[in-house]
Figure 1: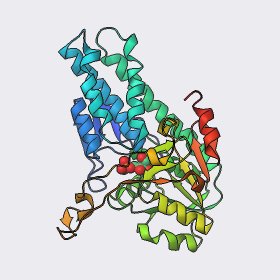
Figure 2: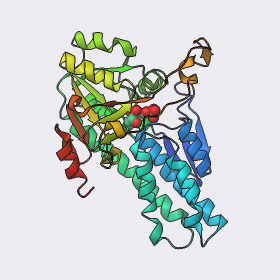
Figure 3: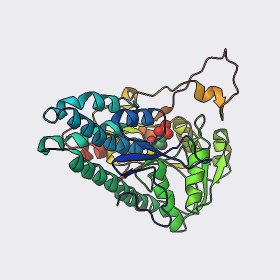
Length: 350
Ligand code: MRU
């Protein structure tokens, strides 16, 4: 079962139940644990847009289950023309968020199954989405082991939430944290609050505490002081898209941490499955950066804290140049700078 959990890995952000997708509503955590039932492709796209589910691999999986829902709707509308009828829904899903490579990758992967299907496509596509979900968790466990093997004893700092909540389960950056903590290698896990949506403060703290891993929250602006004081050996983050030259798009603030890390002799580890790599995009300059509604900055816990006349700039991702990344951990192995050659070997012929 794709949503099976175990001690130390108890959180799942999505599951399939009785013909529908259920999403753990990440807008409400940590105050409330509520599952939202998604029964159509349009609802899936809206849930991705509104961040009911978020994190690059998790939105890819939500889109994959969304394809199952879309195919069912298209088949009911036209049993012979469902491959044509599904196109609008697929386009809506693809455009739900612009930056993460996994979203389009997962939809493309689901489409590879279309030609062989006969009759009602639901059961076969559901099996395909479940396989994808299972493979994501297995990849995360493998990356966890690979990444933990690189750690020396000491504190780590992570940013945003690249954990179970952001993937099929176990997490990318937090997978390394889980494996490193289990091996006794990690003294302190620090996490920046990750303004403005507070993925670090609300989600990473909650997720790690569910699994008994102590975590310390800091204001994003405290990271420099923490590094200067020698409290952090590694910064461990996930990624939304990695370009052919190794530039990494990830949650806004990652670039600042990377610059600080280089100044203070702290190393930066990016943990991401190959579905996050986009070898067709030359460099970070070509990665679309999502701008979200200014209300995310204007309000805090639904209370307005900014004068209404103030302009708002809310880019939610940034690009860290490849030269600031010390190591990339994928499910196919560890890459080191210069990254272009290693990425080309992962994607021959692209
Ligand atoms: O806006 P979000 O919360 O979807 O952003 C998530 C991140 O930036 C994560 O670090 C990234 O998707 C990797 S998750 C394994």
